[in-house]
Length: 259
Image 1: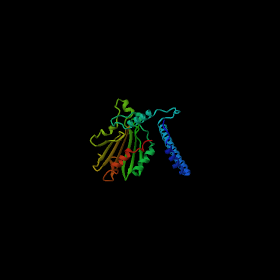
Image 2 (image 1 turned 60 degrees about the horizontal axis):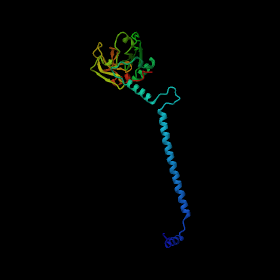
Image 3 (image 1 turned 90 degrees about the vertical axis):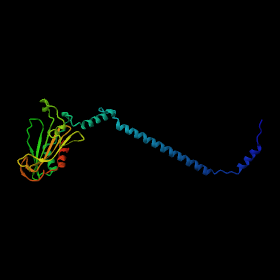
Image 4 (image 1 turned 90 degrees about the horizontal axis):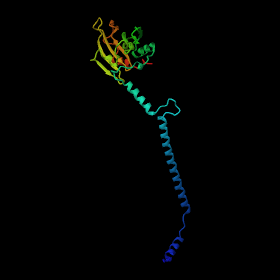
């Protein structure tokens, strides 16, 4: 049976008799370490809470409210938006359905916009035969003494189709002159640009410059600038048509014509 080592025990007892612990420092250190742990715990809890709130907020933005009778799944809504984008970015050779046609602003508002964009001193609305149901509008503007004409019509009207004709596509504007500057815009519209050319009037000095736009939803806009006071007639007032090709294009592609 082992015996106690009384010599070692006595040595340890004597060594510890002279030690006096610094109680204040030990207590203070323990309190400081405890507070640090509490702060770390609170910060961790706050970060976790914010992360959860962020996830919930994101889900709330994506998922329709349950009480909304028209609420649909996020996938359905995204798919619908993609379909709309695909429809707007149409093929220039695709005839647009009639229900895509945008309504126009009132004629007076259209005339005021032409005056503002061209600096015309006068803009006249010209009556056009409506029997073809093209919904045409024609305006004559006077710019620096020369004539600028602006015409908009529905190129894919139902009468044409009902009479056995084929539905038309935006590319129809390029068919009369396939070798000229005709480009496809981002939305599928076709833009025809014709630099100054002899207008075929009584004088070889008569000049015209033309831009035609076939929109993706069925409107055709023709803007013609001349260097004469009238269409293929009247006094020659300038060496070249009074509007540049860029100014004509700005008129044709403006969104100001649609309500």
